[in-house]
Length: 451
Image (cartoon, rainbow, N blue to C red):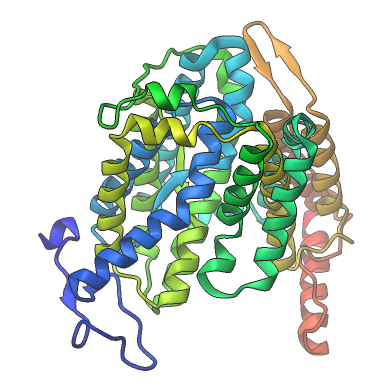
């Protein structure tokens, strides 16, 4: 039981949390409370997880099934040490939509499987050798650029949905904005879900919702399963997504470690392998690729409950819901206008998340290496540059990600050789003068060494 991470100690009396304490991953509250918190986790992931299949045309019920199965698999592989729900990753939206145009749904699923395999392999390497090499390969300037360009690359898709029903889209967007600033706690964190619900009600009143498929669907039945096809042409579309998934997973593990006061470095590789395995499973069955969810970190922060028991409940509840075709078809009735309003916020948030990575790590844009890396990668990604070599087609996300890696490491190597860049890679503002001088002196010494 303990090897599977399904053996929990009761926290205190099981009915309350002691002042200044949190419910640790290997603890739980009484089962009625744990079940309630687990269901709250499902609600927290609902809006974001369902938007991915709705936008990409994948079956919502199937995506829900594999997110639940993936969550349980994640808990088993990490031995119950990392509380997390695996929901749909927004990083998959652009490559899925692009590959569907050329290879159909099956071709897109093949790309999802490919991304999962690569992520699992990276996880195995991290588990064996540690995560430091990832930080060297993808420093904050590179990671931030890749995350930002993935979000901004999707801007035209958001505009197309917005233009389909501008009034509904605008009301959805305004609701999301107002809820996020007017309410605290869990309601404020569920602003996207609330905005989608309000936008949906508006769309109903405006006659923009069709229930034909939902009326014809059964109450109980199997989700729609689809099988993948593998084409070399999707490689350039999906491999860059892996870089984002790595950053999201490592960030999630670090966040949980900070909030629980536990050192979870030893399971970083397991977390990556688990997400990779869950993504492979989803791709083989017709679901969307998965990732750890920030929405659920918000629930943990609000409740102080980090128990993996709650995530077992959430995973099983999600699986149960997925076996209602009528429920799945209800989710699929969300009209384009609502999607346009929500996507405007979501895609923008992904873009700004990249900027947040730069800010949090104090990336110094006075350094020409950082400036050039971000500038070129963003333009390639936003404008969606395309490069075709035989059957391989590289679009903006792939080319932008490659540009960020090649430019950063190429310029850094040349600068070290020539000794031409003395500016530190991170800002020294706010540091004591002595430390600031030491950092600048170290940068200069590094440059002279290259000569």
